[in-house]
Image (cartoon, rainbow, N blue to C red; front, side, top):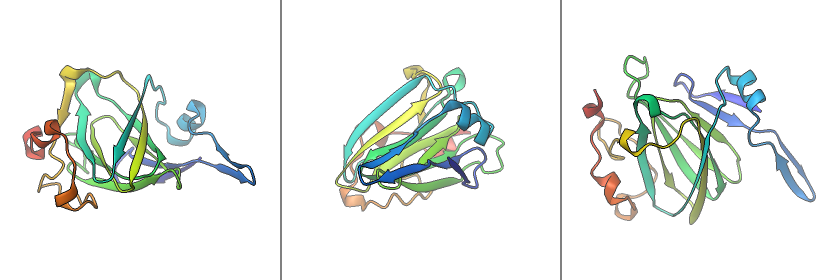
Length: 180
């Protein structure tokens, strides 16, 4: 496992060691002991989630607050997405900054999104299967979100506006400035 810094504290790109041969490939997608040794972070994940989406879908930006805040370890099983993490931790030197990384079944990269970050992704391939681990359980009352197209964040989702497919719920989220 190789760890790459993103410029946002504790938000990390994880590149697994992949063993390829004539039969295909094998890689260990998660090992708690290795994760903790390489990152210095807890790897106590308690919930796995998976979604399937078509080209142009934008999901996010989402988080959970308070005692139900979640860190996530995200990856793509099929297709390609642009994954986005926004630092929404008050007092953080990178508050309001974001990173974008292409995750795909081909590159097998994973992104560790710390607690206190907003998270979302856009689907760049015809379809995509997105998988993520969470270190806390989902709690509807603790949901929070920010509009994917908030001008203050100025995120380029790599999807033309006329084909973006966004849920009704995500279309009415607040602005980033409303978090403070």
